Length: 260
Length: 267
Image (cartoon, rainbow over all chains, first blue to last red; front, side, top):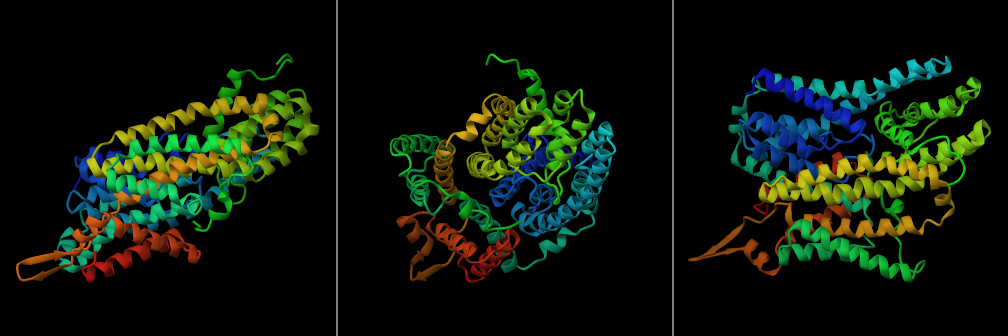
């Protein structure tokens, strides 16, 4: 499907974005970039964007919550984009990206637990006043997680050629239609998780406003976000004069209902 | 500020980048960011307790305690921590540790909204929306600009925490709440736009009577486009509040429902 050089670039990318996620968060750790980048490497940018952006929406509310374990959409985005060289991108989404992302979540938990071992070495170094040593251990801290993000990409892409896509082509139409339809509604999950974390019940009218402006007036999303800034400013001015009376969001009570 | 301070702004900036690198490196379920925090603050401790190795050891060991905050807010806490320890020395350690513990919750409440939820809704949504609807990657580059801005802004938070942080704690928290509310308004509006654009769900079912084909979907579109995905979203939102459903379970539920709808020619 792709050359060994391309596979190595993608494996390396998966490791580097993992480092970025645990340090500076420079933005290469998002599913949308993963799809885009893989598309660039493999020469199918359009499929990559479709897969990456859909997975981005699916993981909207959860992706950067510190190190809380979440489905790892990035590995899913990489592998599905590569596989979409041989199949429909929407099919690659539901049959490849989704199961991989969910399996990767458990791999991530396992890796996170093994950091615990490194931390024990760290604590030992601290108690022995070997400060330099403790710093070095900390540098290599997230190594198990980085490895857990690289190896599956390597294995899945090396196996890629032997997995028969003819099998998927032979599936009946009703099943393919169903899988395609399911791919279309997946963003709902990400949107709903966001709604859980935002004070949706208190600010539902603003959400409706955003919806109506988009469906009827076809406002581009950047225009809408800028409009939102103005509305938020007006709202702030109003609440500043009646401070203490205005309803303030209590995010902690609405959030956190969804674990993982 | 007339009194002589131990740390210059340049040093604090360096410390902030060190902090960004280390904070989550050793993340575990037992101490979370605790050991990351202690590693990050080590050079500052070395400077504060340079004449007292025992105090240094005590401070360093204590700083490894369980700690977890939105990473982008942690600079504020570390700035205050350094200011207090610089002034009070090892005697102030209990103050510092309780400060860290007591600020984790409120700062995360604010930080999670701004740096996770809002960032995801506004920038993530714009990026995905533009990519899906027009294939334009401008939204993604915009998001990159935000990431870079945050990296460069975090040293400012460290300096602010060091110079003024103590006043902030004594202030009432209504400012933070106002900012949270304003950001949330922008957030929910873009969520509304997301519902209207990125979910692809329509009814293929058509009725044919003689020469006329009657499509349910075009009837719906003439009333309110995207009403079908919107209702589906509200249903899933309602469902997600019913039970403690994990993300994976939600994905499964949405998947199965859509699949069944598709079999019934309703999706």
